Length: 194
Image (cartoon, rainbow, N blue to C red; front, side, top):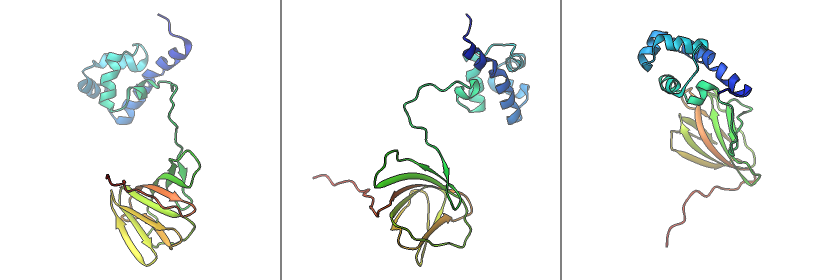
């Protein structure tokens, strides 16, 4: 059965992709053969393009490399109704991903905050901030108060209060942020049942 040219191009790239992945992991054909149960000669022919990739060969390779099968074959993207979020750089270092797709008073962001040093540069602006620490340790300075928050901890404040936040231990911190530009507060409590 002949493959359409687009499919053939994808299949032709599988061997070189497998070779690059094995080299990047520093594995020999013998080590990979031992891990997957696929003979060294089959692995060599697969990487050189002399053997067609099959599901029976690719599944153990994906497991050995701990990558999705799509990564091995370089599968073309298919129609996906999900929104692809784009990371952006923060002005004072770090990265943020806008999670809100519609305009409105409250916006949600995921932020990765780097080590910004130990000298806080306090600032103020309109709004209200709510931060939830996902990973790492966040140092938060609010006026004369200095806090360290760990995973699962939350802080909220009026951003007219002088504030600064950054890594507490030199490693990046991941947080979820809800921000109301006009000072809208978050309501995160469930209404009690009657």
